[in-house]
Length: 137
View 1 (tube, helix red, strand yellow):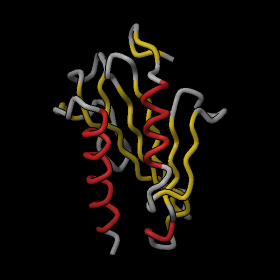
View 2 (cartoon, rainbow, N blue to C red; view 1 turned 30 degrees about the vertical axis):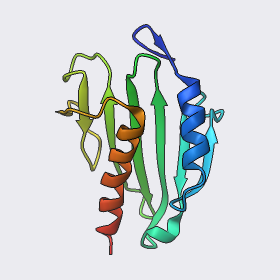
View 3 (cartoon, rainbow, N blue to C red; view 1 turned 120 degrees about the vertical axis):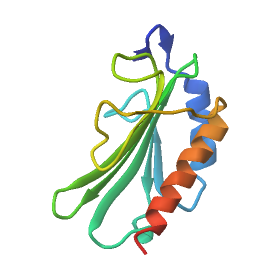
View 4 (cartoon, one colour; view 1 turned 180 degrees about the horizontal axis):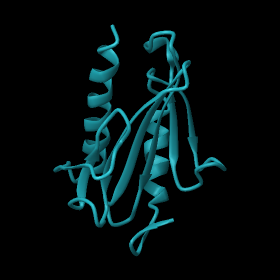
């Protein structure tokens, strides 16, 4: 999959994988799983969540032109979901950089401005999600 004409940046995804799989917040990390072959999928350790959260994951897709999609989702025991997404890509619904807010990552999203470097962007997203998760307690 590409973002306009840019291919997925597997080198950056591999670097993210090697760094993020070692953090305590994630139970597992999968690079290019069959169900998301152009992505890094990180599953949160559920000890950080109340018992009604049965799954929480972060899916990252990064392109060679520095466009990206970073999707976060929680799935609850009652079948409900809470999700959001940070995006940088050309589109018809928002500016190139935009955020699809929770609880349903609705489109159109909110125009936004994000860090350029992937390390800063991933840190930004993790800080936002850490704050959300702390809100449970």
